[in-house]
Length: 81
Image (cartoon, rainbow, N blue to C red; front, side, top):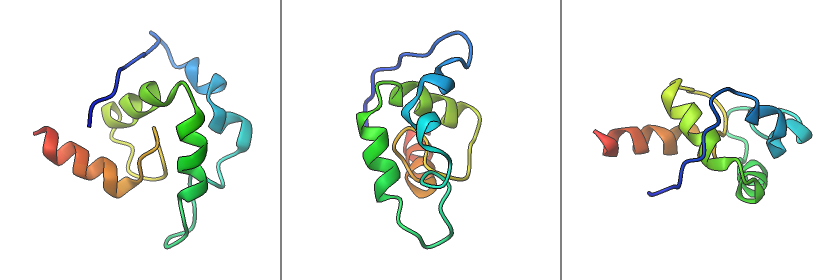
């Protein structure tokens, strides 16, 4: 997976991301719930690459970050090694 990375020097991008406007329920669903809606929102967000880079750099283990679920980020980390 290749993504162009736009990462501001600080975390102000988080307030501008679409997820900040929708609330955490989509992005941190109950176990076994669908993440389809979160991924749809992420796909429309121009800050998705910065979000994914942040999640990988900070080892975020829960929720949807940068359009990827926990399992998808884990797989990405494993293939990056």
